[in-house]
Length: 413
Ligand code: PMP
Image 1 (cartoon, rainbow, N blue to C red):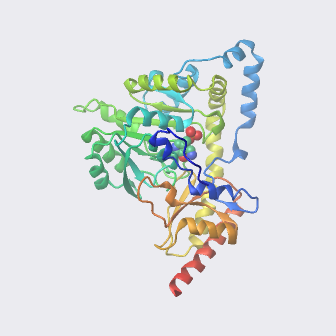
Image 2 (cartoon, helix red, strand yellow):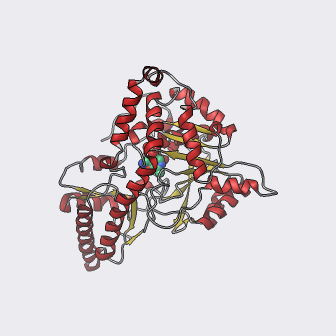
């Protein structure tokens, strides 16, 4: 549905459009639809007992309750920042609390970084495809997007170097099991990207909300961890170019809206001022609850989620392997929530979605939404985080049969 514009809106805002896909997806909230569209955590796996206990503990302690409902500092609740530095240290990132700013989810972190860096026309490098929410939020600052394709080890180096030659402000990527393609950037590729970034002086913005949701193969160090090692080596350039964004949304619960940025203190100091100007601070009570449940339940949640989501991923991969026409390619994610399909040219993901919803009651997200430039229309994202294995199997079987029919019809035409 299109709305008339309001006089006086800035160009960035007047160019904002509700995506056609979002409109389509509104139609699929019917129970008979098997949906692979929602890339969200399964609420049945939320740590509700721990959340209940944490609220009770705060509310029963008068002093704590008064603090919990009071204004607090923009940098974030100190014990939560400390928990985050401990979490980062366990993953090879050495940082002090002064290098961590708590944000309202990773999404606000991306917004602040966009606001801090982008002036209209500035280059911003994105993997192709990329997280839709990042494309949307950076888009409001009107950059010139430069897209870099990925192979199964991550961004293609020769194309990334060509992009870095244009002196962009930063390179945005999700290194682990990216949303939407499920691709993980390999260790060798990470090292090479880091080297390129330092050679060209381009910041790397790594968005890591899924890093704990790994179902096979050993963990790969983040760019922030690798840069820490690089900065120990003699003759390094001394610059800290990696901006790490984390989130508790996928492991604990999204509604607490807790994310963070870990970066050079010179940048964090500026971002704290943006936080102050924007919303003063994250909800004090939410930060206190997040801190409690992070301490009590983060490790057990990770274990529980890995088990549940791995089973769903395996069921989806098995069904794809068994039923999908051979001309359709799909990724094999080591973790996260997403598998990416690439159809033969001529099959349009948006048209396929309309047919799938109407004829076989299956939904997914057409891939064209996930491109900052030049969308590939013959693509789709499947999320396996929601739903019983049996429904996942059934949905893939139906989708595969629809694709078989379409390909047969295309061949006959
Ligand atoms: N980055 C990526 C890659 C995501 O997939 C998401 C959520 N879908 C976010 C950031 C935003 O997460 P948060 O809830 O922490 O704002």
